[in-house]
Image 1 (cartoon, helix red, strand yellow):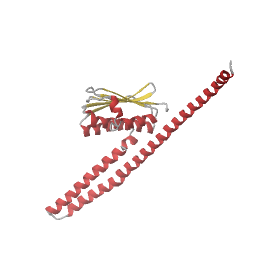
Image 2 (cartoon, helix red, strand yellow; image 1 turned 90 degrees about the horizontal axis):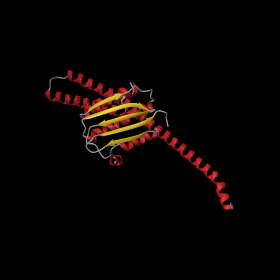
Image 3 (cartoon, one colour; image 1 turned 30 degrees about the vertical axis):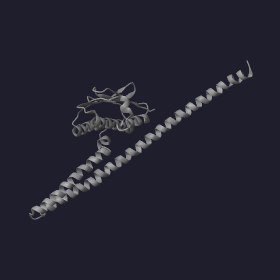
Image 4 (cartoon, one colour; image 1 turned 180 degrees about the vertical axis):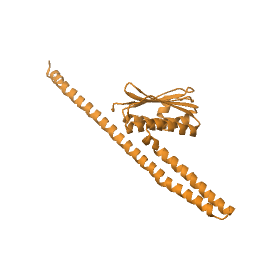
Length: 245
């Protein structure tokens, strides 16, 4: 064996060891990236929760009090059609603003998610989105293990974005939202009977919201699958491991 061959053989264990160290460093960096990403999402949700409560408990209650004061003021005014018409218009404006404030509060962070949990929040989401978009939305859920706040928020946000996509793009009539546990993973499926799409084109599209869903899932070690074809509806499946990373 020549000297060069000997040097090459001796260097292989060193190269292998360096390669293993590099892999371990990359895996550690990936875990840290996911941890930081989840922390950012947690901060965002905390801020949404704070703003939602301020809108509901602060501005919302002030508007409610203002509406009652205007109503009481109207009861004590003399009968003047022009003046009463102006007062009724002010009360109507106050009422519309109150409705908008409550809706904005729910969109930021629905209190039902924190107060009653994921199942109730998904049922509420199906009802509200169905009424707003004229969709028949059914929610099916198996008995689930205890989920932490981050996972419940993740599932809710994925379902919310998926239903928004259906409402905007699918031209569907019926939607099924199904949440089950399979092989140690939480699986959320959103199936519609709409016009369908080309999956590759939809996943590349920046306006579909699928990219944001994929990034959210990646931070939890999950993945997003889209099965569809033109004219045959679509099925979005989010798979989230229950054992962390």
